[in-house]
Every structure is written in structure tokens, then in C-alpha cells.
Length: 238
Image 1: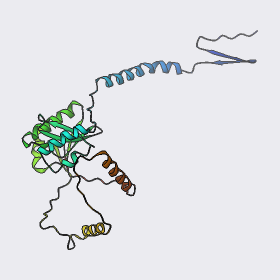
Image 2 (image 1 turned 90 degrees about the horizontal axis):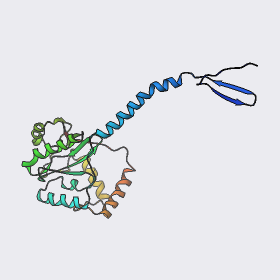
Image 3 (image 1 turned 45 degrees about the vertical axis):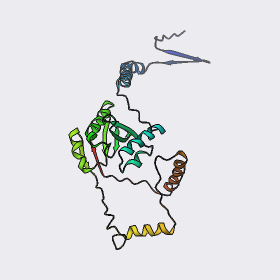
Image 4 (image 1 turned 90 degrees about the vertical axis):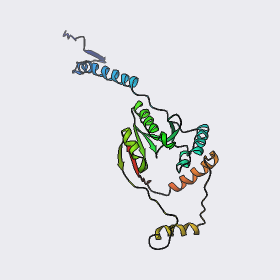
């Protein structure tokens, strides 16, 4: 009778009249060698999740926040007031509540729209506090569409300046749609009149019912257009 011996790492599979012997091909040893690296990677991931910077809470303002912002803008009116009450941006009060910044988080950036609103004497302090908040959370602060006469404040706080556009100023006393220069806009105005388009300025903030109606109109219009176009004017970042 012929006998065979199997080592401790061999395995037998018995069937009807068959004997199969499986011998190691080196996979076990490779697995053992890679095990410390897997443990090290898992430990590093756990350490990163534990020690990483906390992200700021940037929830859309509720009714109470909007009412607070509205009272603030009543004391400090500006052209950006209606945009501030659109519920799509977060609100940051700096310099002990003397200035207000509207911003949104885009990936690893906190993007503020325009200059701070409020007391001009608190402008630089508010910009500095906004940057400190971004640094605290390991995010990059950016100010988009800043006024030229305020650029030195951003520079003093440590921001880099990038010119990506200009602001157009229109003299309403001399403005006219007549002539070649107003031809394109004149055609648009005449078409709007033929289609009985009306314009109405609504007080802010808007109620939920009206927001729903505007959203439905906007979605219907966007469905007929191509990819959205983006335009920009100026920005400042550290």
C-alpha cells in the first residue's frame, strides 16, 4: 500500500474515489506581510478623523435669522440687502454685531458675496474675524465682488487680490435706448412689451408660498436653456 504525507498547511478534499492535495502558493505569506500596513492605514484614518478640524455649521437662515438680518439692514441699508434675504447663504456677524457678511461654503472655501455690510468703522475687524473663523476650520476665505475703494482693507488683513472683471456704472440722466449702441437692449425691451411682461419689486423676505411659485417658474425656464453661464467681477483671497 502506498502512503502519502501532508504537511500542516496542506488540505485534502475527498470525494468518491478521488484525492486532491492543495499546496500553498505563497498567498498566505504575502497576506501576513501586508497586515501591518493595513493596520497602520486604519490607525491613520482613525487618527485623522479624530484630530481633523471641525467644519463650521452653515445652515440656511430660518425665519428668526431673516428677521434679525432685516432689522440690521434697516439700520444699514445697501444695494445687497435683497440678496442677503434670499435664504441661500449663511450670515456672519462680526465686530460685535456691527457688520454682516453673507457667505456660502463651496468645498474647502468660505465664499463671501461682496463687502461686509454695516458700519464702515468695523469693516476691517469683520473681515479679520471672518478669516479667523475660516482658519479655525482649515478652510480658505474668499471675498467675491469687492469694491475698489475697499481693497486696501483686504490687503492689510493678508488677502491676495485678483481682478477678474469691472463694475459698470450707468448715468441714468443720459441713458437712452436710441441709436446703434442701444439696439440690442431696445429689441429686448420691445419684445417684452409685445409679450406683456410686467416688472414688480417685492418686499423681502418672501413667504414660502411665493418662493414655491418662483421656484416653479425658474425650473421651467431653466429646462429650456443650456448649461448655466457664470460671470464674475473681482475676488480677494488669502
